Length: 372
Image (cartoon, rainbow, N blue to C red):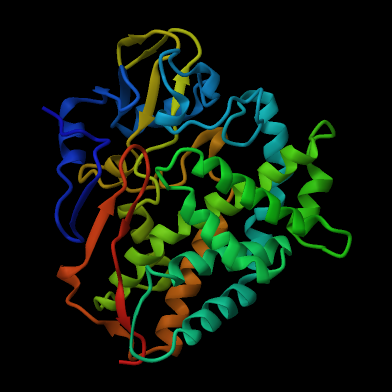
């Protein structure tokens, strides 16, 4: 029997995850029950995963979700027809929108911001002051949001509003998520005024001509929320590893942390748009499919090579370069400017919590003495 892969859990930072080995042992394609009702299929083998992530008959448009699914309970976005975005469109429409985004977040463009991103990490860590501070309480959220607002040229006096809205995205209260999306989209519009010259205005000038103002604001919301969510979760594992006397070079430290603790344990939902044969199993149209990113990344029998932390295929994460640089900046600044920093509790006492569904895992707290 496979433990429920969608159940919220909390365990020690070094405590083995019982779900991943059980899924791998069950085969390359595992049928499981979903919180939204009915079955879904989880891919546990890397070759099959890469096939799925590039398969033209397996799409991200929530319009192809099972008809019985409640979109709210399933955590789905609106359909591509109602809300076109990088995470709902497929095929040529997705490629057009991706061409508008990708150059703004290329390795060259992001590397040019390295000094500024390191400066932001330095300022925020310094502002935490003396004594024990919990880096998961504020820093892990404020750092990536500050970087994103700065890149988009959104006034930084809106940072607190952005932090509040991002936190409300995970609220179980009815309607809370919709209000949080609207709040982030509205503050993002501050980066589009005539006196602004950041990536927000560049994106406005690059998107397809049929893009509406509301669509553009949603694209900016997606950049802000996804960028915050990705780095927020990773910071805790990175710093815990670093302060547990890990002497790896910063790039190696970042890569290993993201491989072992990917911000998203699963891909976003995908659905078969027609009958598709996977691993010898015929899946009818509208079958939900997930890739077990964490299980594949941490498979002890996996061959060396690029991992699946940021996906693969047409939907490979456009913000991967930014996430890497942000984490490297945190590691570099901590080592160079806070050499006496240490964990305020034994490493083994740190706890990680999986939020349930297809959400990520983060540390419940990270008490640190920055000045020893």
